Amino acid sequence: MVLPQSWKPSPQADREDWGFPDGVYLTYTWRVSAPTHTTIKVTAKVRDDLNEVAAAEGRTAGSMIEKLLADYLWRLEVEAAKKAMREAPQEVWDEYMREFKAWDATFMDGLEDEPLDEDSSAHGSSSA
Image 1: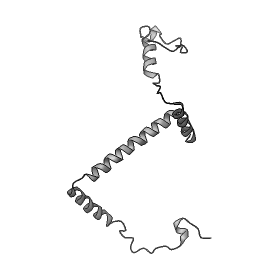
Image 2 (image 1 turned 60 degrees about the vertical axis):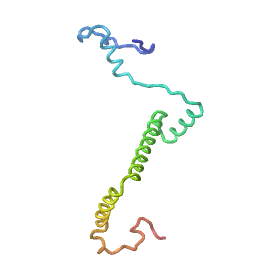
Image 3 (image 1 turned 90 degrees about the vertical axis):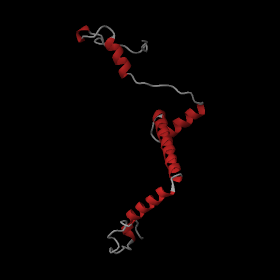
Image 4 (image 1 turned 135 degrees about the vertical axis):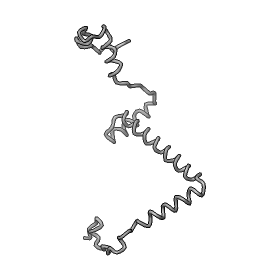
């Protein structure tokens, strides 16, 4: 195992009174607790654009890549759902519309008797 030159184990890293043979504790803690990072090759323009967009959102380049990937995967999932809906047989749509109409009937359930408030301040805007 090759450790970085800058990494120095603590004096207790391989203490025999812990019951570990020499090097076991050091190897285990280095391999288990060390962060895993990798490098990807991109053009300088892509790197600069990524850093600029990430900084504008208060993110690191790595977290920006994670967000962009998550957004992309979400779009793929939504597109797959849309495709499945477009390709669904008519009987599936008929059942969906029956259920939709049943729930839609509850949309104003009991509110028909309520008077509408025409005061614009009740809608979040103020009239000057």
